[in-house]
Amino acid sequence: MEISYKIVPVVDRDYFPAAKKLIQEAEKSICISMFVMKIGEKPSSFVNLLTEELKTAAKRGIKIKILLENQGANQSTLDFLGGIRNIEIKFDSLQKTTHNKIVIIDKNTILIGSTNWTKKSIGHANEANVVIKDKEASEYFQEYFDRLWKDSSKDISLFENFTGDIIPLIDRQYFKVVKELMSKSTQRIFIMVYGYKLSKTGYTKAKGDILADEIIKAKRRGVETKVLLEKSNFNEQLNKMNSATIQYFKKNGVEAGFGSRNIITHSTVVIIDDAVILGATNWSYSGLEKWHNTDILMREKGIVDFFVNYFEQKFNSYLKSN
Figure 1 (tube, one colour):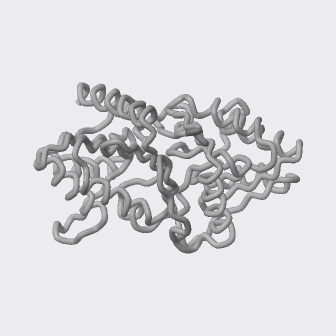
Figure 2 (cartoon, rainbow, N blue to C red; figure 1 turned 120 degrees about the horizontal axis):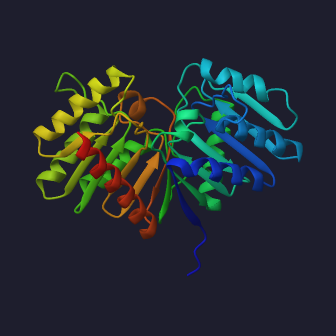
């Protein structure tokens, strides 16, 4: 059977060369939905170099659309690229946060994951992405992008069903898929996310609480369970939130810990048995229940093995320092 797609992991410092190459190889179109795209003060910064590549692509006739979250950090990029021929760039609706980090090339290739176009995200943080050459998945995300471009004020509902080794996940679909996989897990559940918030009351069933229940139930039936969360050197509110979550898991027998303060753990990697899910979704109330997010589920063995190793490396290294 011929394989119709190609998946390449793009983690940590791999992102800049991968994104640059995709932009340079684009033949018809580039569509980007990005939470933060912040041009730096130095022309040599990663984001400046990528935006210059976009300008070069536009000059050779590539049609480019960029949808940015409506926030001040993105204004400089909107000003820099606005008005350039073949580039359309705009903010999303103020009614909803667009937290995506996705680049779509020629409707047949996607770069999807956790990396924002910022100096820290591209140049310093732990980030997990993949490049996928798959026409069906790319066209699906293109349709999702087009719907957001038209009106990003509300959730985009599932509009096509996928089976097989690659399954795109949009908005509220993420929670349902993760929960179902967890409930059936028999081998492992590994979680690496930037922020994970549990409700304070203890009796409400927010989606983050429901997923925590599934992890604990899996642990009690013998599934290997590990959770790694960000430990910030500047955001104590995030640390307080993640600390409460870590303590809750530890109390219930789940291995859990902080990443290092020396590097931002921004990767969103969920490994459940023989599947890996990565993308933009944080495990906060807003991330799971309100924001626009793009994620991807993959079952290709080589890719799952790669991200198991990636997770184990970060988890083992960071727990030694705690």
